[in-house]
Length: 315
Ligand SMILES: Nc1nc2c(ncn2[C@@H]2O[C@H](COP(=O)(O)OP(=O)(O)OP(=O)(O)O)[C@@H](O)[C@H]2O)c(=O)[nH]1
Ligand SMILES: [Mg+2]
Ligand SMILES: [Zn+2]
Image 1 (cartoon, protein in one colour):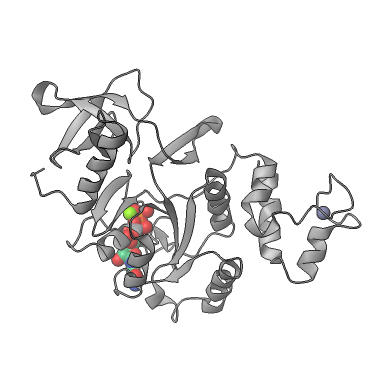
Image 2 (image 1 turned 180 degrees about the vertical axis):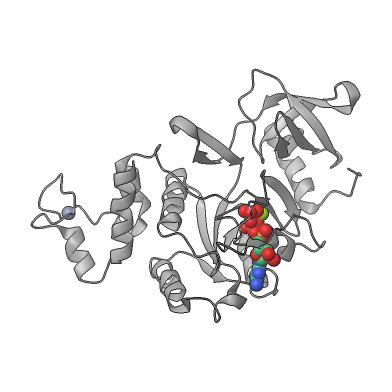
């Protein structure tokens, strides 16, 4: 890839890294099997690299030190400590890091494909557990009127607004609501997550100033599902913020999270169980249950409580 001018963010980052760790000289932009693309923090060039075998699996956003190798392929020799990681469970309960050194996880939904019940809550529990900043986006707001059940989408968004999550309605292709989104993302590194086909890559393109940064796919006409167009996470530097596009997923398991963390991951439930009559109250019909009482009083949405029980059952 051609050399290009350093962005303000890159210059800031170099300054930061020089203060904290002079050795850090690159950021992982993307990975392809055993090879990774590393952006040099010195001149902004992107170098294809291998990694030394003693290093853990590296992910997009990792700060690394690399050295030039043979045939223009570099070698990553060390990994700087990660400030944060967004991970998803892989096979056999192994946690698979997806992106490192991020601030915000932007959960993207759309009127089509229909949001999977429970998926948003699973993401939110993971985000809360990891101490990252959650944001919820309804993309394809231009399709809201004509979709199957606009009221259901409105109600869904209202649940999250009522518990103080930041919720924005945008249209990536219709350039609607994108300025508000740019403002919300300013100065941070954000990973976009969600089902295939909701428009994560389209958002990268819509928010960017250079057209068509990320590859966009359609929806399959038969099932109205995404086509799994994005196959590997990738970091994009946009004007004033960084975005990491990620592949769409079908399910997001929480096998690695404890029951207590799941409870705490439902932010409106925090502290709610303290007045329960029984210390080990499961909030499923026991007498003197404060959580049930709060739900009956309309302080907790029944759908969220149901979602909490579903996640507990799945652990
Ligand atoms: N009407 C409308 N269509 C959109 C909008 N954003 C994206 N799309 C369309 O939705 C389809 C899927 O978009 P992508 O950006 O590839 O979705 P993705 O979430 O990146 O999908 P994966 O990479 O498979 O995870 C494409 O046909 C886009 O043109 C929008 O705001 N409005
Ligand atoms: Mg994509
Ligand atoms: Zn209870």
